[in-house]
Amino acid sequence: MVKLKVCELFTSIQGEGELIGTPSHFVRLYGCNLKCVWCDTKYSWIRQDRAVEGVDYKYMGVQEIVGSLRMGSPSLTPLVTITGGEPLLQQIEELVREAKLLGHSTLVETNGSIKPSRSLLEGVDYWSVSPKLSNSGNKNTQRLDWVIGTKHFYLKFVVTNPKRDLPEVAEICDTYGFPRHRVFVQPDGTRPDYSAALASLAEANREWGFRVGIQLHRVAWGHRRGV
Image 1 (cartoon, rainbow, N blue to C red):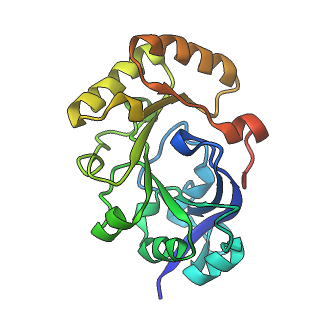
Image 2 (cartoon, one colour; image 1 turned 30 degrees about the vertical axis):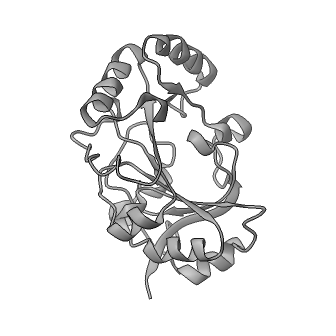
């Protein structure tokens, strides 16, 4: 039986992208292969080299996860979001199958640097792919050739400097053939001047035509876990 390193479980609303506002169960897995300087969930990876079971994460089987979330009412909570960290570092196939057997749609949030297994590509309903720009402090993270062939995807990019970052987003989209209506650009969620950053991004985006996104959970609750 596969056990997953779970950072936290909670039920809230999807706060970003095309499914924004949708009630969702969240399974946040521990560990990430990237280290973004502006990451707003560093607690899911910051101690990765010296993480302690029971402190930073808990090993849980799929049925334990399902039971903890009371994942039995798809009419009330239609979506299960599997996020991280980077969830594709772990074997999530069984979790996806169980969620779908219970009647939920599944959304996987990934940084796009790891190609999913065939069963995941066939089974996951929505892919939220967040490639990292140079502003993240990472290099050469794009492995995005698999994305176009998924059932349904959208991309999210964190923009810290619109003048510099939006041309980089456009270059990635042109390289892989991503249509701009599937692309969200959004401000760094850790900024204290979030509203001003959002307005600046929206104004700059007039020249590019992407979809400007927000973090609804950040607007509603601020920087809190479990929302």
